Amino acid sequence: MKTTPSASSLMSRENLYFLVLAALLLLVFPVLLDAFRLNLVGKYLTYAFVAVGLVLCWGKGGILSLGQGVFFGLGGYCMAMFLKLEASSPEATASQSTPGIPDFMDWNQVTELPWFWQPFHSFSFTLIAVVMVPVILAFIIGVAMFKRRVGGVYFAIITQAIAAILTILIIGQQGFTGGANGITDLRTLMGWDIRSNEAKTVLYFVTSGLLLACVLLARHVLGSKLGRILVAMRDQEDRVRFSGYDVASFKVFVFCLAAALSGIGGALFTLQVGFMSPSFVGIVPSIEMVIFCAVGGRHSLLGAVYGALLVNAAKTGFSESFPELWLYAMGALFIAVVLAFPNGIAGLYQRYLMPLEKKMLGGLGKAANTRPTAAARRMEETP
Amino acid sequence: MSTSRDFILTVEGLTVSFDGFKAVNDLSLYLEHNEIRVIIGPNGAGKTTVLDLICGKTRATDGAIRFKGQELTRMKEHQIVRSGVGRKFQNPSIYDDLTVFENLEVSYPRGRSVMGALAFRRDQQVLDAVHEVAETIFLADQLDCRADLLSHGQKQWLEIGMLLIQKPDLLMLDEPVAGMSVAERKKTAELLKVITRNHTVLVIEHDMQFVGDIADRVTVMHQGQVLSEGSLAHVKADPKVVEVYLGH
Image: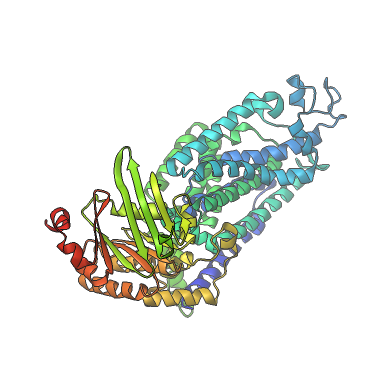
């Protein structure tokens, strides 16, 4: 078959990049960074889950969601509810007027654990909920919107509205959700103290491992025919529809997949940071997540991971020195990405560094990679 | 209906009204098996709308469209496609970011559900089908080429190929030679002749030379209605047709 050579060289190249990322996450960072910084990186990586989901949904499928914080938050809240219940044993909360319920409920004159909190006593239920609660919401939104052919800007605005609604709901229902403070003071996971440095390091490795697994899963999806249908749908939706595909069901699928990834990221965020609050759910964090993806390169899974790492590192660095300037810097960065390098870091890499790399490889041995890969050509030719 | 047994496509009393304007008005059309029918008519006569109605892109206000005994007017677009209706759009709509091979592969009628697409494997059957169609549409040497690098004519052929690989029973082509060079037109006419050996084809075209090359029968549309129908010579001689269409 004619496509084999370019496809196989692309595969090995992709594998190489993946291994570089794996080495960076699993070896370089843990060796170079102290426990505090490593925990910060672990936190940034939880956003990378969202960014990877956005590559699938936005970069490939052309569905821009400005409400991924909703799914991130739902995953995070599911985990936080489990941890909070564990931290609210009757012994630990003996001084409350109703012992055995979370402290914020007691402050809000709630005297009984609400029904939707009950199942979060179970860890296995929580793990399922971390994925399924975001997926179910995404499914409902997806069916309601995509079956009616709502897309593009309208869809983006609706997801943004949902992010706003969920934030207002969480803040308004203080007695059930912890309100604007969120769910705080989380201590142990099945008796294991998650606040210790050692636990944070373990959680960092869990996060990195899961992220790499999710990248592989996303790569598998994109490598299948479904990946090509997503790209086809982005370019010529009608042509896909009139080739016998139910376009809406593919959109629902990829939107749900992105939501699931975001939910996993959110749960890992809660574990590493030790609390969850509405400030990670609303409009601003949702847009930030899109920026992570755009800066990294919305067509590139690995680019999205680097985007999440770099923008968050920049955010931390900036906020430490000039806290009031960060929002402007973020805005400027987004404009710069849109105007100057629409394919993000991945696009810049493919444009400027890959030719150099090829020259060096060409000098070393036979020109194994003389042909630009399909992905590289794709990047260069996209205006 | 007794007539529907003899015809692959039966359109009866088809009407569509956009805010009171009847783009297609009480139109009836009967297509026989393996017939090449060309619809001609002045701009705004409702030609493209008829194709839109048949493939479900536009919903009929009134009337019936029966294809192989199935009523199409209430089916979803992808179901209509799966029942054997293929539609080529006026502007070449192909997937620019995919290669010619991938364009054809995505159009191959297997793995059309989400799970089916995830489980889809590029097996010998698919390869054979892609290569066979690529041969037919003169693109066998461009399989690895990105589709947006093709010439305008090649893009049109690719879209026809994307329909062919689905093996539809009815092929609807909206101005397949518009914007083509003379040489490309000739090749396209040959292509259509090959294709029509085992398909029923409904074509919209303005190029009378081309119409004469391919048409079995011609339907002239005017203001959403059939003005005249028959062989090209017959409609050319029809004074009504001369007045509204050919005369100027």
